[in-house]
Length: 347
Image (cartoon, rainbow, N blue to C red):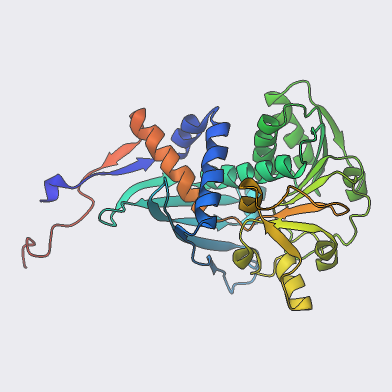
């Protein structure tokens, strides 16, 4: 019986990059599909579990488990285990590292193990870019403001450029000017005719950008005024803890999942604790995708605050597995499972 077991497919980060190259539209379709399956109830999304460390100097470090089941056209289950160690950057390694395990829905056994920091970044970016484009309500985007010049915002820009090829100018802000310059260099490698400015402060970005993307490692809200925003602009609040509760209260708030985003002292969670309700959330991205909510309401700046559903990782994991199988990529792991207990030799 053991020789009949299906092997587990191991897919590396380099292979994920190759498989996803030029497939931004497919990735966004998978993310949108997962959001709609979740809205219609054919999914199981437990709360993420945070592992923190009661050790001096490690207050910002964490490892998060995101389990889930995604039905519909995906029919998969699994878990992402993702570590965020911000000080890694100063050592020349990535802040985030992750692994994704997909389980076979026929027997529950793991069928694939894959590097998942790329999947995590691109599902986050695809979701944010779709929201930014949709919340513009048909208006083109020419200038994008980037607050936090790291890999997630680089990925957000990748997907925004697919949705909005009219983008011609970036304005960057990071507490570390060298990171801003590195970000600019990477952006110009992908699109040489971009015009890039460096902001002196937040108002410089908000007053001139069609879309502003916050993706920082801020642990507590620090920005208490967005009155400088252009009236037709959109804010993508990817890092969730940049804007004060007062700013959130004034905005038109769209999220990925209310139950999940109102946790872990996000800006929205702090506001809920302050006023005792969640009426300030108008709806979800899936509500707008299926037409049950309009893209935006008059007189308020739309803010998209995604907690980051593990279901999106499952959707992209299934896409990666399908592509790897088609292209004969990945390493098959045979003999991973033990024999049945009835077949084991007793010592």
